Length: 282
Image (cartoon, rainbow, N blue to C red; front, side, top):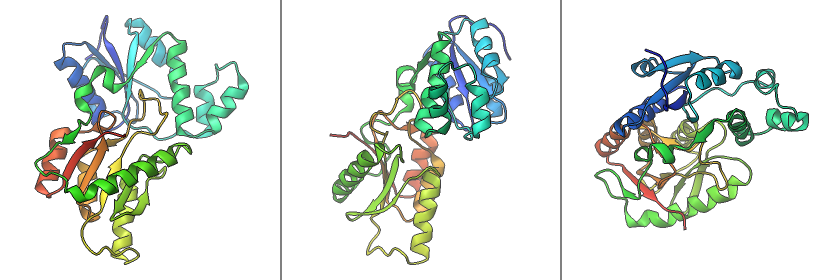
């Protein structure tokens, strides 16, 4: 399914269910949608919407496709594997400032994402955040499932948020596992799933022993992060891995963390006796 879309919002779709959820949310609100699926990443379900496929390493073709359809705003959603330096060079070849190009190519993920935003903005296309277009997909404040967090976790949540705030200045991680005032693991470039697997292995190998089940996962956006891209997310898989690692619940920053497959996530949490709650950073 494809064709002209007038005042549609464009969705640049990487892997996972989230781009499809954004498209469905926009349609529910009466907005028109056009999905550009990144070849090799986007799910087949984008075919339920007006769409085309584009190569991530051919931004000229992607931008031309958007302009032909008079699309003036886009949302970037879904995962992609980080390209190597040579691939990044092919993406950013039309940057005139070579020093800036070098910094983008050799920088961390935040710098690369800012470079991607620049590509669209210099072409006259506005990059929207999920909160601007599909706020119903973000976590709300308070308990979101049937299980309420025990009051005893409040101090651990505060500790985790303090840790995340300090890590943010190093462009590092959006998640922490904490138990009884003790940081068990911090999220690195490998992501939340790998961190939760580490927590499981540490307990399995008795490198970490907990007196009681009290560990929780806390996720928040990085301070100073561009809210239009790379917001932290949790989904049903997060619940599965958290339960396996012996966690009792998950706290996320309200209005700043994406709930992928929200109902399935909350159903899984309820089924496993785990809380999911939204918190605000004071």
